[in-house]
Length: 378
Image 1: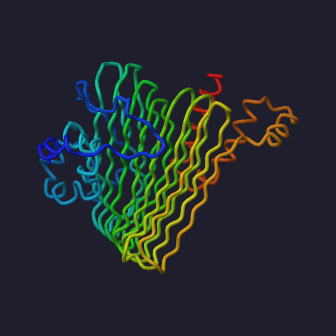
Image 2 (image 1 turned 180 degrees about the vertical axis):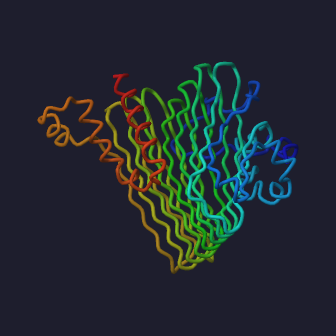
Image 3 (image 1 turned 90 degrees about the horizontal axis):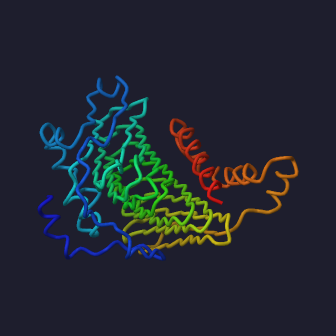
């Protein structure tokens, strides 16, 4: 498939991010690619005892080629756009995770990905997660940078949640200021399967993030919970999409973002109910809080309805910190930076409470760290 993707690249379109002008961003993988092992895996004894798989791409090709052939590309079609196609054409590292049918895991699988910017190398990684029929597990992903040299990162995660499975996927991204990144996370969700997304967009560089849930099975469900914080002169553009193909499928998007200094954050929430998806439900909420008059924020809800007898709704807002709330907290003796962080915590609370408990505290700590970093820039 790599050769096929490479041949198709010149004809593939650039991804469409409304209200984000990224034409001058260095998103192509032009430098040598990072080849050292880019991830570490933490899994309990139960994971291995029940026949689950978590391995690098080379091992997966040698030992699980039948599964790769069956599921690779089911969720993420490289022909969708040029950046996705480039990931497939040029990737040299990857992770394959497989949880067999009817296996339920109590402990989460935790994976840390490290983008090494100590050398002039780009970073391309492809992750494939497969949940067998009626399987249930949690996956916690941390993406971080080391070093400060300029680099491009291209990370693709595709999830196949087969019939009746339940997957909780959580990710915290903290790529460095000099790393420009394209992040594609996409899921294929089968009949009566449920996928809970929880994503913390806490990187410091220019980020394009493309998150999709394709609900193909009847009764398929997805909840996409996202928080994002931008600081300095950073720009982040997020497309969060739920496509309802299956009857009585249920897709929900909840996104809250915070903007400091001269940064920019764009939320594009898209709910698309396809023809034939009778009884489907598409709901979304996109809210942005600005802490600077120099910042720019957009919350763009889009609903596309191609059938009747469905349910759909959206909410969106862009606003500033409530001065009365700040005044009240400061009148009780709190310094302004701490008062601002308390207001922000309250704003992010509706999303944080939906995040699995195992990953909630690490995410909360990373949010606090980035807010402090942003305040130190003022």
